[in-house]
Length: 77
Image 1 (cartoon, rainbow, N blue to C red):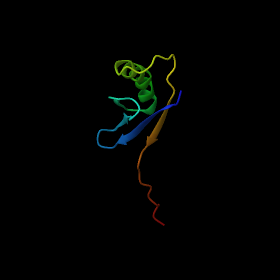
Image 2 (spheres, rainbow, N blue to C red):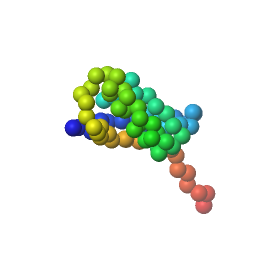
Image 3 (tube, rainbow, N blue to C red):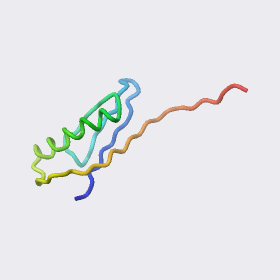
């Protein structure tokens, strides 16, 4: 089975990771850390796939792609 692709982006204003996916209809999840987000995804992905009538399968591999924009500043000389 092809791995499901999950995107997670850091929401600076809310200070949470927000995950969505074109491969998992209805998936929107947020958490303070990527570890907490992964724990939620392990529950939500099977539930949402079942709800959308995806074929049964014991395992559902997925790739979590995280993206966070930030700024580095040089020290004054």
